[in-house]
Amino acid sequence: MYEKTYPSKRYINTLEFLQKHISKDETILDLGVNNPFSELMKANGYVVTNTNGEDLDLEFSRVTKGTEDVVTAFEIFEHMLAPFNVLRAVRSNKLVVSIPLKLWFASAYRSKTDPWDRHYHEFEAWQFDWLLEKSGWRIIDRSTFTNPVKKLGIRPLLRLFTPRYYLVYAERKKKD
Image (cartoon, rainbow, N blue to C red; front, top):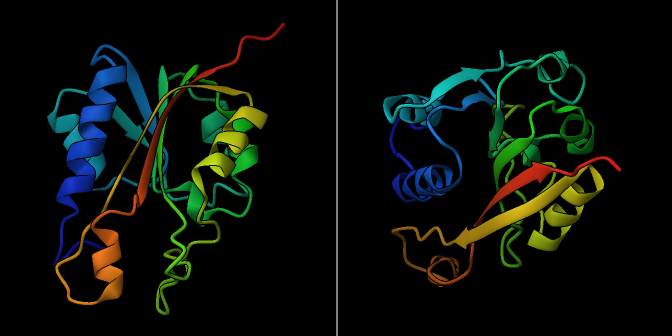
């Protein structure tokens, strides 16, 4: 996926946000296969286990049986039809997630060659907040940031100041 480009700004912002909320003593279950960012987390002292590439809309037993302290999901939920189900099933009490935000000037992303590399959802921040709240999470902190591209045109100009990514740290709501 990143043969020619590496999302440096996204990775730097995400790692700083993770370090702000999660200690290196806490174990992490990262949703999705091993990837450059999970390797970056490991290189920065985190103990990270990844899921195995199963379709998390249909099979999320790894999440329900998890013993890790934290679940992370970086650019995963936009690919799912029903992220509500896996969010409710998470056993950990801490969650750090990021999603690409819906851009009013661009259609949802869809790879024509890779059926896994498609966005079913591109959320607005309030929609994702609502999803987390409905699935049992209390948002503690959030952050947005832009994703400028080195191209000419109206859309590249808009990407200079329009937030593209949304990071959230949430904790499991206490049951009454």
